[in-house]
Length: 182
Image 1 (cartoon, rainbow, N blue to C red):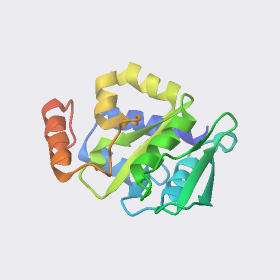
Image 2 (image 1 turned 60 degrees about the vertical axis):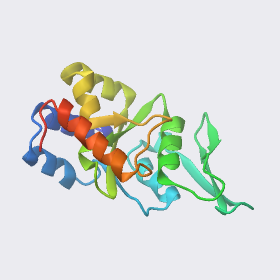
Image 3 (image 1 turned 90 degrees about the horizontal axis):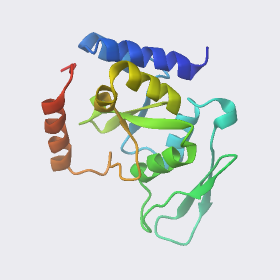
Image 4 (image 1 turned 180 degrees about the vertical axis):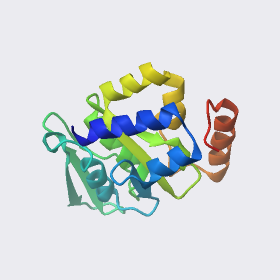
């Protein structure tokens, strides 16, 4: 049984009975979630996600010094794709790095933001094969899975959202909570 299959079962256990106890178990499981601090180096997050991927599907991450205020480009490579993370000219950022990682592993895998970490300066992310996320959606409903595990898209804002946007999102989640653990 590989790590992603084990993680699928743990996420299913959580979704079947979301509670404070289940949430604590998710938070305490080493290797289940990727925890990213707002101060994290972007190339480190690629490494964190790679630890969850099977070795054959891991992404190569290279940095290259450039003549822009941000100082570096980060290049991601898989067997099928290669891309430079599209950062602003002056800074690198976690949101762009996570969105790029999602783009390069898609469609085989999906990164999802574990929404119970919303509101902190360290956010949690889950990674499974796309078909495993689809299994969870069939078992628990797409809306329930999306409530707890939000798919990373090209428009996702996680670390770069304003405090007001964060509180609006927290309020919206409170209104739509299926079986919240709060």
